[in-house]
Length: 163
Image (cartoon, rainbow, N blue to C red; front, side):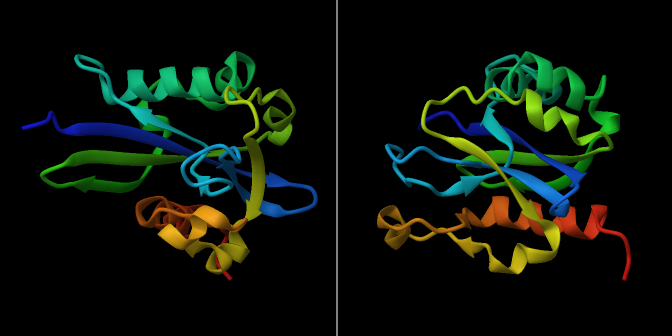
């Protein structure tokens, strides 16, 4: 039996001048298995012997660039909000969120993957994000896997001011 996959993700949220409170999503490159689909800000595997926070930190530095990661990340998991946690026979996955007060980190993002891009999605518009399906392999849509879409929904509950 294959080893159980363990992964961690981070959804960064901030208040931007044009979008208001918005999530920073990663749009996959057109060469990806789900071209142009979106995912949380950064996401990746937890390596053998690595703690959840160490994996999250490594992924942030790899996928966002050192400058942005230093501006965004707290010193430990206590500075993060648990958004989703999933565990089944195949994988353990956890996604955290963080509200970054100063949106200037946006200018320091350095995408690791050529052809991909970061985009800001206002949390008031999260209902327009679709769940990713095999048909989306041929379309340019704002679509995410179910667990990541759930993380964005939870972030809207956590980080949007009450109406």
